[in-house]
Length: 96
Figure 1: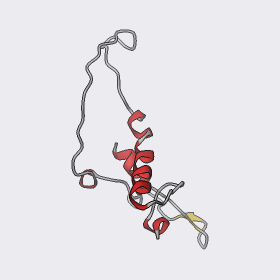
Figure 2 (figure 1 turned 90 degrees about the vertical axis):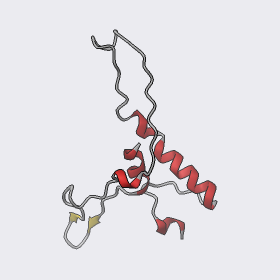
Figure 3 (figure 1 turned 60 degrees about the vertical axis):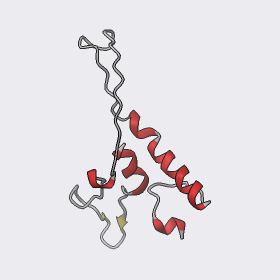
């Protein structure tokens, strides 16, 4: 869920035309969300045993939780402001 939040609102890297390099050249310069950016997140586990997937019978969600997060945030922004933003990340400049 935090990956989707970062994709929708924070994560971007731009090329510096004067140097011909990325502005954020390492992970220390790249803006990603942290725990403080999501005040309350509820996690619900669905216990389903599936021995076909692997011997332990467990599945991981992985990146599936990220897919709809950016779209949901973009729809919430559209609902609140009336502006449809069709690029990511959504910045305050897109809304002004």
